[in-house]
Image (cartoon, rainbow, N blue to C red):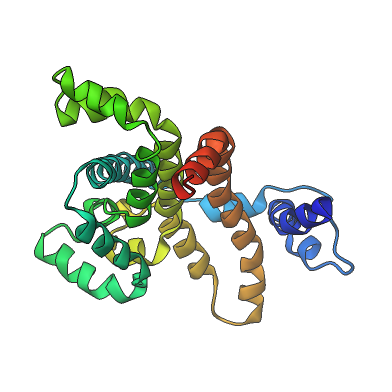
Length: 267
């Protein structure tokens, strides 16, 4: 049963990748073919031709790096404070309440704040709102609470400041939690199309997902023939957006699994 479930879950991904190397006739063939015959790169060349691909990739790299590093740092500091400092329980529960607020409800207030901070239209408008991550704070707090309290007390007796204690003692012991938070924020950075589309209006500021989706939308409209021709572009764009996520998960899957399990489940 497990093998069948895995096949059913992975088959759409496989067909997306295989279909990206087919022409329109191969994609619409009945019965469907599971292997591109002949394989072609035409969908990729049509998708990327004449586009600032390197600019999209560079912007995406900057956004992803800023979000991953910033959100893991903020989650570590806040989670450590909630786990070790008494009297912050009320603030911690206030943080958790924010998890239940849908992201769509916050889009307009966030957009107004970015305008007031004069960073709307820049990459900072994507990075700054993503630094606050309640789920990451929750995971890191629970992870820190699994570390023996005696280790923290000994470090304080030796004269370590809170910053030194977090950097030299807690962080090395919680690499799995940090990796889990980083992977989740990396996925968000690469897939948060709506927010990035709203705040990144200039072509030279666009990220990978905004540029690829915009390229697909340019091919749509004008009748069913144009919509059919965009099918191959959609499969190619989906493949290009999926590969970085797959690489990140394969590389960090062990730390991601350990971080989620140890941060979300306590003895």
